[in-house]
Length: 386
Image 1 (cartoon, rainbow, N blue to C red):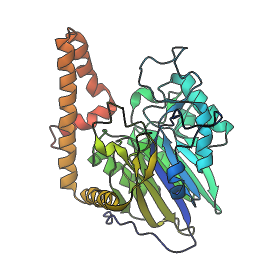
Image 2 (cartoon, rainbow, N blue to C red):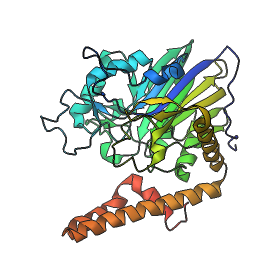
Image 3 (cartoon, rainbow, N blue to C red):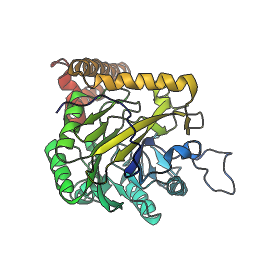
Image 4 (cartoon, rainbow, N blue to C red):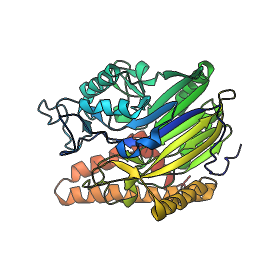
């Protein structure tokens, strides 16, 4: 079945389940904005856009730890995404119902960081999916009951270095795709509504890779109602497919873009979208949806976009939806993004060699095809974006 045009067709009927989704969220305490040590909500300026949902879900792109200065030496990389456990209460206050933990930063703090995160969420009564103490817990759906209907939430990511093992903590794997499709089908046999949340693909790309489009549609074919995705840090299109809906990237939501050398070079990283979906309680299909753009201010917190900037954001979004209806445009965009990724790794290897580390540069290049997430863009080069 061909995907339907991208239009935010909000249903005006009252008999519906309303689900709201947000993008990548890193909880950050802003000095000088708190009273009596109580964390200020990073969601305050957009709280009105999050209200009225039967389910509010987002991607938690950080781990909780009391050791914010790394005094115990739990991690080696200086740019890990960590958060004060005291910030967790702001999620509940904002109305979040469930979080996706299957992302490439959940294991920044190692097994201890994941354990502190899940313990913190359990303590405040906030369900989560996509990670766990072992493979079994990581791939298990999280279950919610709303309006007499059962909802299953499945999380999965493509960073194989963080995959959970049989007895080791980690995130749920997106591969093999056949296993993910089977998990989705099994969940659909027990739930009325299945939501799959994926964290995958190359960053700062305005169109999804063709393989991810194919996988997303296959997930709908296997019983998913919604496929919600994150990781590119910029917004990608949304499409109706069969009775479901696929959002390829909601962009950033709460994130330290300003002052972040990695993201600040991409102005689009300042934009995010809040997706609201209406589901028919009887048929469990999508009856309407809309997207609301937000802007991440200098204090890393989202705020609504109004006036001409909002109209510009809506036009840009419509263009990204249109790309999804053309396999040729998707391949062209994917090929261009794959070449940029190849040039980046070639330059990194060159600089390492110039600094007297040719062996390390060669090892980095040899390691590229060993990582499953790299094989897709490497394969796109000789296959012209396929």
